[in-house]
Amino acid sequence: MSRRDFLKSAGSAAVIAGMSAAGCASPGKEDGREKETSGEMTYRTNTRTGDRVSLLGYGCMRWPVVKGADGKETVSQEQVNRLVDRAMESGVNYYDTSPVYCQGQSETVSGTALSRYPRDSYFLATKLSNFSNWSRENSMLIYRKSFENMQTDYIDYYLLHSVGAGGISHFNERYIDNGMVDFLMREREAGRIRNLGFSFHGSKASFDYVLGLHDKVHWDFVQIQMNYADWRHASGDNVNAEYLYAELSRRGIQAVIMEPLLGGRLSKVPEHIAARLKERDPYRSIASWAFRFAGTYSDVLTVLSGMTYMEHLDENIRTYSPLEPLSEDDIKFLEETAVLMMQYPTIPCNDCKYCMPCPYGIDIPAILLHYNKCVNEGNIVRDTGSESYRKARRAYLVGYDRAVEDERQADHCIGCRQCIPHCPQSINIPRELHRIARYVEELKRSR
Image 1 (cartoon, rainbow, N blue to C red):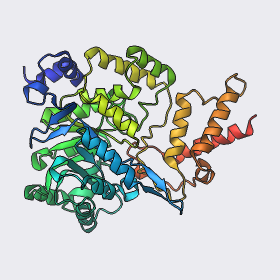
Image 2: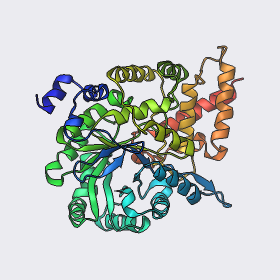
Image 3: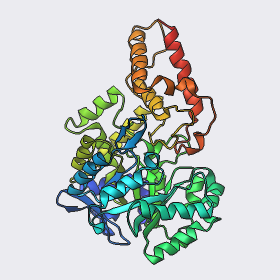
Image 4: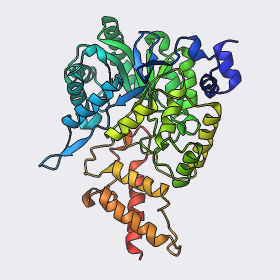
C-alpha cells in the first residue's frame, strides 16, 4: 500500500503518529525521519540538507523586556543572552525570528546573543515581513537588513511571512508581482539562503494556491499553526492543521510548527479541563500535552516555542529530552479535550503582538488575555443575582486594573481598525475591545 493510500484509508495522519508511538513501522521511520537523539534532546533530520534540528525550536517573538527611564519597553539583551546560553547548552539549535518581532528588536538581540557561538552550531530562521510596503525596493531592503541585524552572511531557513492573510491576490502583490520569489530562489542557489519556505495563516484556497507553486519554487519547509485544538477545530479563517499537515506530508515537505500552545491558551485551560489532564497523568504539566502532540508527528522538523522565562525553557527542554510520543489513545483523549474547550468562548488571541503598537496606546493583547483568563476561571458572570457575581466582578475589575494601565484600556479604542489586517487569527479587534469596554462599564455600575 502506498503512503498516500494509507493516509486515505486511515483517515488521519494521527493514526500514523499513533503507530509510531506504539513502535510499529511508519512512514516516518521508512523515510529516515525517525527520532534521533544527541545527549537527551530529540532531533529531527532535514531530509534535503541533512541538518539535525532540535525538535524544540526557539521562537524569538516573546523575548523579555525591561522599562527604561522614559517608560518605553526594550528587550533585555542580558536576559536574552542567559536564555540562549541555557538553550544552547541543552541542545536547542533552531532560532526563529522576524524583522517585526519585539517591536523590531528581535533580529538584532537574537543575532547578538547567537553571535557568541560558532555559526555552524545553530540554525537561523527569519522572514520577509513586508506587510505595510511590499515594493521590490522595500522588500529587498528588509531582506538585506536581516543579514546585518543577525551578523551573518547566510540564513538557514528563510520564510515568506504570514502567507494567506489577505488572500491570493495579496500574496501575489507581496511576493510574485514584485519578483521577490524569483529573487529568493536565486539567493538559495547562491547559498545565502539554505532553505526557502513560508509561514501560513489564512484560507484553504490560499494555502492550496501557494502550495501549488511547489513544482516551480520547491518549498523546502512550511511553517503552520498546529496544536490539538486547531487539529480539527481551527477558529476564524484558519485551516484545520490536520489538512495542512497531510497536504505537506503528501508532498514530502517537512513542517515547522508555530503556536503549539495557541499563544499560551493551551497551558491556561479552564480548571476542570486542567483537572482532566492531571488525572490522565499527574506528573506532566498542562503545557507538555500540547508540545508532545506537536512533536509526535514524524514530518514535523521542529516545534517553536516563544519562551520568555527560564522556567518555560527548562520545562520544554524536559518535554523534548527526549520526546515521549503520544499513543493513539492519547491523541483521542486530546481530541475529546479540544471539543470540551470549545464550550468556553475565549477570544482567539495568541499574544503575537502583530497588532502592536496601537496608534492610540491601547494594550490590545493584555486586554484580550485578561478577558480569556477570566473566561477560563469562570469569572465572566452576567447574572447580578447569582451567588458568584460579586466574587467574579471583583476578580475581573481588580485583575483588569493590574494587567492594563488605565489609559491603555479598551474604552480608549476609537475603532480606527488599523489593527485588523495585522491579526493572523482574523480577530475583529475593535469589536472585541468595544464589547469588553461595555462589559467593564456594566461591572462598574453594578454593586
